[in-house]
Image (cartoon, rainbow, N blue to C red; front, side):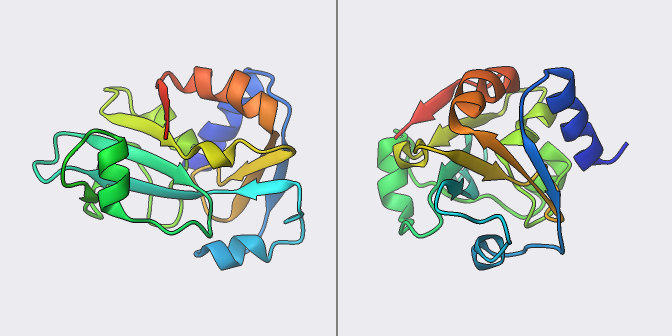
Length: 162
């Protein structure tokens, strides 16, 4: 079973309402925002895997696509010094993912709970929220309330809001 098939099976097994769209690979936020269902009521998110220098603390930080990202600010808000982008080999090793497919939905693969989930508060907007199902050739849209009340608890990772 592919990563995408596993994620979609999880969503269906939990009976979470969603929209599913397949498309050409979307490698950038610009690609995502150009998709035909990108509408004013859809929040697309930028997902960043961070770690400390010793690679003992990992964070999946979810923020708005156009929000400036400053590691010093995020590090301070997460009470973790010297966060930086996690090495590229962490995605396949920890989450079975490739670059460009990172999503909170990938935390279903983090059985050891090594990664902490951190959201920018501003992603909690009205309407819908969109993520790749850990494969950048598809997008899943959830109503905001379904994502926060059903998906996030099912991931088994406590969400931090900054």
